[in-house]
Image (cartoon, rainbow, N blue to C red):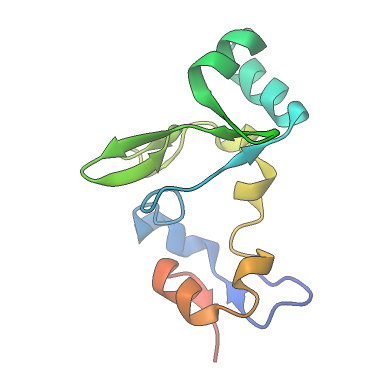
Length: 122
C-alpha cells in the first residue's frame, strides 16, 4: 500500500504478527471527531453521553480516546491484546485509519520503521 507524497510503502499483512505497536507503547492522543464519536457510540450501542464519559478525555478543545495501562504500556482503550487488534475496527478514528501515512512520519522513516514492521523503504 502506498500513499502519494510518502517515500515508503506499507504492508498491512504485517499487522497480524506485530502485537499492536501502533496501538500500544508511549502515552499519546487518539483524537476523535464528533462524527467519529457518534459512529463508535452507535457501534457499541451506547448513548453518546455515556460513551464520552466512559471512553474519552478532553485535550484542549478536542477529545481523545482514553488509554489503559497494561504491563507498563499505554494501550488504546479499544486495543484488545487477546485478539491482537482493535475492538472498534469498523468505526476506528481517521487517525488510526491513516496510520502509518502521517505527516509526522514523512521525514522520520527510521523512527517509523522501528515502530512498524510493515514499512517498506529502501
